[in-house]
Length: 307
Image (cartoon, rainbow, N blue to C red):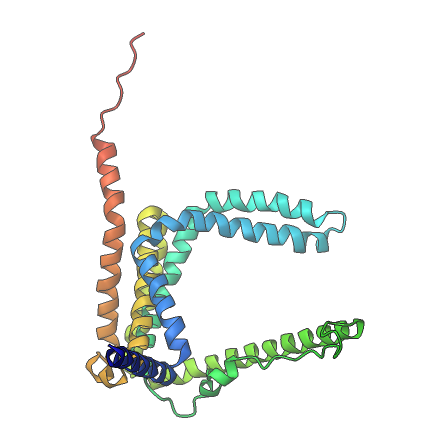
């Protein structure tokens, strides 16, 4: 019995060591960001349309509260930030509810104009090494982790003293400055990275991506104006499909790089895959809306009362 227990413990320890070695070989970004992005994408893909109206109202309220609390007092000093924030919070909520149709149209135009190229780029180019890429160092784990600024403590009490408050403030300012510089460097590196990746795409594939972007934006805006509820399902299904497809392929390449050659490498192929997946998600969201409309049409109108 003792040997059996020790054997089980040894097997468990060996299994734990293998798991630790595997996690060390995989980027922490792939372990965390990949599954999270896939989960968000699947949520948008299946039920995102139901979140559009509350999201538009919430966005309007947040924007209104921000304007009333920060910008309005700067323009008119007599306005109290709290009162301005509350008033414009209500105004923003009302506008978000009233402009739902227009917001869906704009969002659908943006999603259909950008989601396909983004999804194709993530799925097709993530595994490629672009010569002269400037984003490699900016995307490394060492670059993304802030160093931090230690604060000295009183040796006797190990508590902050009055002088430590100034050190803490300087430390916070140093970390904030460091984070800002890293954010600027990251944005510049990503801009250059996108340019390099765009140049590496074949000319015919560029035309296909550009044409799909323009046509999708125009159709999206028109559909959002005419049928906002159906458009809300379409916009979230398209965005969700692009997100979970791209994140899924990227995560697969991080975990199983040996299977990378089995995936399609053509932009047109990935565009077709995205379209089919997005349409499937949109159809899933459209089905309850269509049933509700049929049920409403089938319900007879109440008879008018005779005078």
